[in-house]
Length: 237
Image (cartoon, rainbow, N blue to C red; front, top):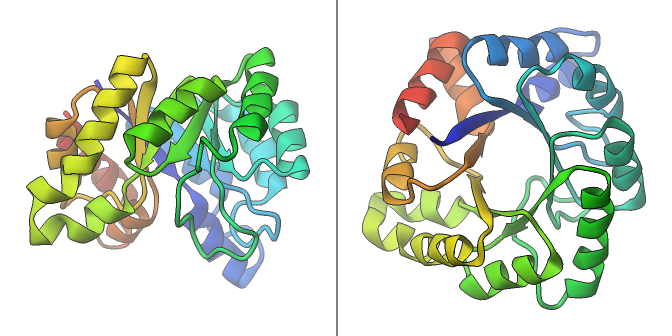
């Protein structure tokens, strides 16, 4: 069974564009759970252009499912994670000025740093996942760093899907097999949508979790949040 974690960053983006508290990010997180999502993902960035650190603190005690915090482990992010203690932290190497995540970690080059971070979070009872490109070597590197899971960066799969889904998913299948052989849990995220999600799960059914935000919130503008989450869950099941 693959869990759906809804990334609510885009809801915060809409709120921040106008100020005030509309839409209410905390209520949206709880509604996503009520509508069937098995987890909530947030990705706070230092400039707080969408999810704010204060949102993370407000949401954490109310979440009834699984809470996943993504981000680059700079000191302020590390402090926040250790303060709120989510169920899972996903380490993402996004630059300070990145519009969105655009690459996975080089787990070999950054082994010493990632090993220290993984140990710190795991010592505090937080499951740790490393965001990687679909490269078996990077998956093995994540295992060597002490990660519990990897999250496959699925932008290339989504971009190439229409040109040939078998070719698009091939490197992901190899990386997923490597994760399974290494004993790592497997997550996936970035540009997964109603169009390409079902095939991904059918091909890699041992995926533990998909984290979906942008496409899901865009679909919800037309279909409503409850129906949209139901449709995404149907693609997984």
